Amino acid sequence: MKNIRTVLCCLLLCGLSLPAAAADYSRTPLLAGPVSVKNDSVAEVALSTPVSRRQEMAQLYIEFAESPGYSVTRDGISTPRGLASLVVTLSGDDGWRYTADIANGSFQANGVMPKFVMLPPRGVRLRRMTLRGMNVPPIKQVYWVEGREKLSAPGTDEDLSNCERRRCGWREAMDYCASRGGRLLSIAELKLMYAKECAGKDLEVCRTDYWSSAEYAPFPRKAWYVDFRDGEAVPVLKTRLADVRCLVPKGDAAR
Image 1: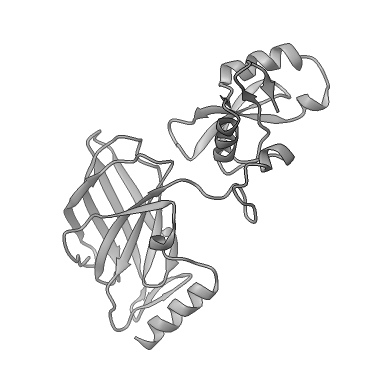
Image 2 (image 1 turned 180 degrees about the horizontal axis):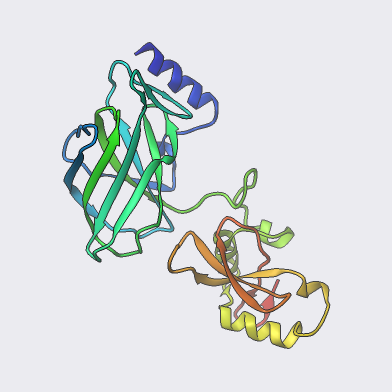
């Protein structure tokens, strides 16, 4: 118990916060009660609350019950038998299985937030969960955590003036254009603008890339930008920085 408290204090001092404290995130419990995962076996349970992704980001938060012999650190969960491993899979009505591995997650206090290998598409109903692992502490609860990406890049904030002063992230760009009463241009509109302004030219305005309004369907943490060096559309993470052009009420494109 003393070790767990020490780890909790260390994590909080290092700047890690529990998901419940994040203002723009929702948490939905998925288990009707605690679950134990035995070594070399699979635990399969029906979700107490079926969920589907509505927001840009979706992740799991696995909360472990306090148990003697387990130690949670920023690098993983250690036990007398070695490090713990755990893979969680959610099954959707679309017939696909969406997997999250704690090896790709962030460890916090008495739990871990594993990231999905591929995000479930928006609107797909998720109803069942399977858990497979080794040396796994008793699981108190698994939460479905959902919200929007917060940061464009380490050390930056979501100030919309970023889009006026310098390049900004996709979500900031979307909000910035909306604040002007307009919207981001589509891929087709940006390609047409490239053809008119930059094709075959070497201008400063043509040496950058511009966010489009389109998300990248196979992996919604990405969106499309158009590179004005060659007019090609490229899917990149929404946290990347790019320039912004908005379609405002008068029909003018403003950087």
